[in-house]
Amino acid sequence: MKPLPGDVHVNTPLSNMSIAFFQAQENFVADRVFPNIPVGKKSDRYYTYDRGYFNRDEMKLRAPATESAGGHYSVDNSPNYSCAKYAFHHDVDDDRRANADSVIEADAEAMQLVTLKALLKREVLWAANYFATSKWTTDMTGVAAGPTGNQFLRWDDAASDPVGDVETGKGTILESTAFEPNTLVIGYNVWKSLKRHPDIVDLIKYGQTPGSPAVVTLQAVASILELDRILVMKAIQNTAKEGATNSHSFIGGNHALLCYSAPAPGLRIPSAGYTFSWTGLLGAGSNGTRIKKFRIEAIESDRIEIEMAVDQKLTAADLGYFFSGAVG
Image (spheres, rainbow, N blue to C red):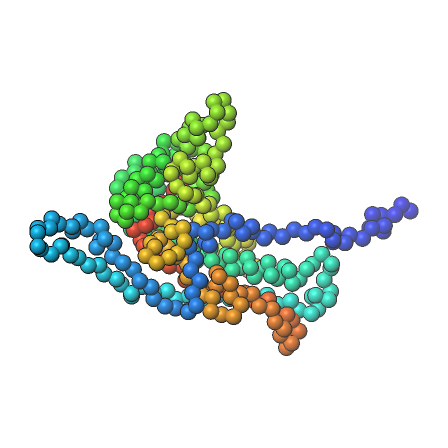
C-alpha cells in the first residue's frame, strides 16, 4: 500500500518563523508630539504667565525729571498636574514554559505584550486629551459641501484647500499668541488624502526637476506648509471585548491637529501640551514607565508587569487648532 503523507511526516511548528502582529513603535505619536517632563513627585503645581501683560504697548514719552512709565505682570501657580498610574501584567506559568515548543519564547513575548499595552494606553489617552473637539480654542469641522462659519471642505475633496486651511489656522494661532504653529498631527486616512491632493502634488512637482514624478513625502508636505514636522497616527486599537469579533480602527480617526509644540521644556517656555512623567518610583524611566518581573509561588508563575505614571496636560488651548473630520 502506498504510504499516506501523514505516515512519513508529522507536521511540527517551524523553529525559525512565527506570526505575531506586534505594532511598530513608530506607529505611535503620544511621546513625540509634546515635550516630556520627568517629575520627581506624582503631583505638583507649575507657573503660568498671562501673555497679555507682555504684549501690551505701555511705554510712554518721558519728560525731563519725571518717572518712567511702569507696569507689572501676573503669575498663576494654580495649574497642576497629577500623574495617574496604570498597570498591566502577564503571568508565565511553569507548566507552559516547560511544555512550550522551542519557537515559543514566553518571557520575551510577555515583555512585548506588556510594552505594547503601555504604548496603546498612552496613545489612547493622548487622543482623548488632545485629539478631540472642545479641547482647543478653535474647532473646525469638515463638511462634504458648502462650508460656513467654523467649517471647511474635507480634504479628500479635490476642490478643497488644505494649504489655505492650514495657513488660516497658523495665522489664527500666531495672532492670538505670537507663536507660529510648528507641528501638524494627522490621522492615517488624512495623510492618504493629503498626499494625493492635487494642490499638494502640484506644489511639490513645481519644485522638482521637470519631467520627474512628484515624490510626496511627509517632509515635502511639511515644507510646503512651512511646518517643522507632520506626524501621522498609524496606531490601531481593537475595541472588541475578548471573545468577540475583532474590531480594529485607527486611534487617530480622521482628524488633524495644528499646534505649537516647544522643542524642549524649560522655564517660561509655552507649549500647547506637556507630558508629565513620574520618575519617582524605583526603576522608572524618563517616561514614567517601569517593567518588573517577579515570582508568585502560589500560582507557580513568573509575573511580567508594567507600570506607567503619566499626566498628558493641555497647557495652552490657544496654541492648538483642531480639524475635526478632515476627511470623510
